[in-house]
Length: 143
Image 1 (tube, helix red, strand yellow):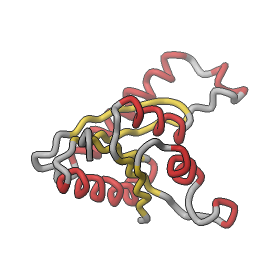
Image 2 (cartoon, helix red, strand yellow):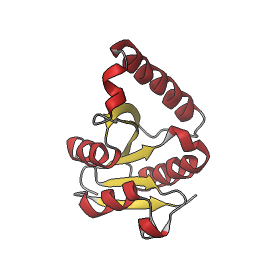
Image 3 (cartoon, rainbow, N blue to C red):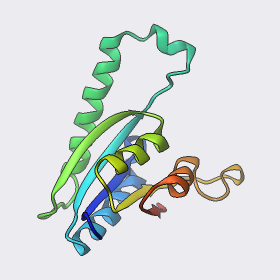
Image 4 (cartoon, rainbow, N blue to C red):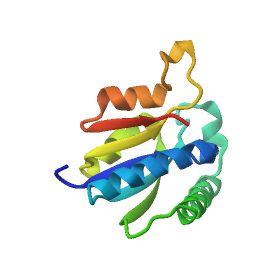
């Protein structure tokens, strides 16, 4: 690994399965002496008609609450001496994951895939898009 940076995309709505994502990302970070970025992306429905009616204060509070939840999630992990940063982003999950990986020059993305359906061709749509379009290697973790 060149930059020794790993991005783990966490979905706080699936903490049990994403615990597996975090554990695998930590293993990878430790084995490569890498820093780890745990990221939660608030799905943005910017094209949704309803978005125009949600007050800005409420949107801001969602970010604050998500950051607190991500902090709690990270505190539940055995981080050891691994350098970990936590970030909450807003947008389209696969796009933000790829863009953030590029921004931090990630060597690896670790992402989960939940309950695949036939229409998803055996991995979730976000994991599939990240795997197809990322500029680095991607590990897809099953619960």
